[in-house]
Length: 255
Ligand code: 4AZ
Image (cartoon, rainbow, N blue to C red):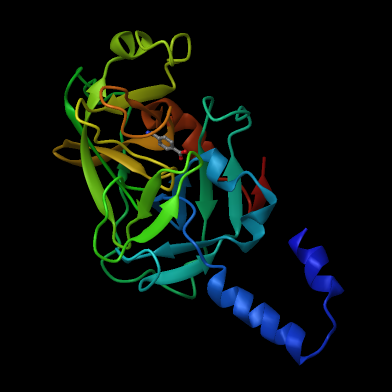
């Protein structure tokens, strides 16, 4: 639709100006992702499963949502074939070409949690990071109204939140998640409203086991910050084989 609208504009300076202006104001944050090495990042399928993926970029190597680091075109998207809705197989790999343009210094890949690693215990601490909406105004944040008219904010710098792991048994007890707590997801939340939210999607949920490992991908929830109600994350350890195979895919878009 966007391209059609562009085509209607005359091929003049004003069209050029329009496109340039759009390029400067149209850059907005969409989702998080985690760098896993060899040009590959892992994110949520719902973050990359639309036509606008053509315009989307990866910004890597900065804590600021709008500046610093380096930005790359995405040359490959591998969507999980079983992805239909947000609560099933919400996982995708995206690839950037770092051959001729090395990653910014200091960027490290995160290790994926392995199925053989010690199981998570109910109540243990996991950490999420992202540029998703917050409930409190901080310096530099942009004011937004949510669908219900509530005021929410976009933080300029990366935030982190420590959450508790909710065992599947405990998570099933919430009517909102009953029958949806498949082995391929995990639940994490807090009793005091700490949570992930819109904009954190695709980003990491990590656990410290000798080093930080990736255990979850921010996927979905019912609202944000509702005390006691956890958020839903893709359980990365269940996708070890899928990730290995995805990394062998040729460049392009694979659905
Ligand atoms: C979202 O819409 C979203 N509270 C992400 C996380 C959570 C809710 C919604 C969890 O991207």
